[in-house]
Image 1 (tube, protein in one colour):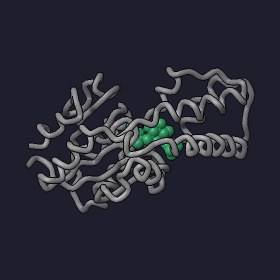
Image 2 (spheres, protein in one colour):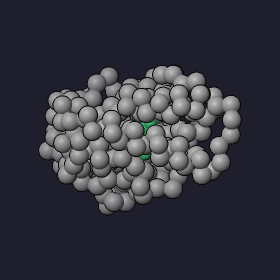
Image 3 (cartoon, helix red, strand yellow):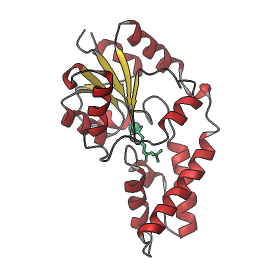
Length: 212
Ligand code: B16
Ligand code: MG
């Protein structure tokens, strides 16, 4: 086996929360009178909450104090978490679940490396609350992707060397983070359009061929 562990990004890889992020940011932007659309929302993929807010505020005419920014981020997150309550195990595709099970059956350790502070809540909603061996997320990092911190922590929690881990990502910033961590990467979605990743996946189950 080429790797001993696989570290998965959450949003855009294991499940999709894009639309809920969009609705929650849109409501905040509307309240502030700032323009916001799907294209701007796409730029928030893999980006931390506060960095996302800065992108949303690019189209805001006024200025917010640090305290107001924190309140705005909290307002967005409260709405986002309400929306996440709509998620259920039906939001986990059979292909993703079967591929995860097959990777585990090969003896690989499975971890999460996500920028989201809502990782555990989302995993619980989709029925994977106790599934992963270790979780590294927005609650245990100080620097967000493309910094490698989230993946290096995931490897450390799994007890593995970076070179023995494969990262699965949908955001270019996440692939850059994997490279900076000294890890191979497999790209899905948007990230698969760039040629930075070690592997570009057509479908999630193609992962099974990358690890052999
Ligand atoms: P939260 P990932 C990222 O998760 C999302 O892609 C990104 O859109 C979001 O801003 C970020 O998490 C922070 O999320 O506000 O829940 O802490 O793709 O790294 O799993
Ligand atoms: Mg992602």
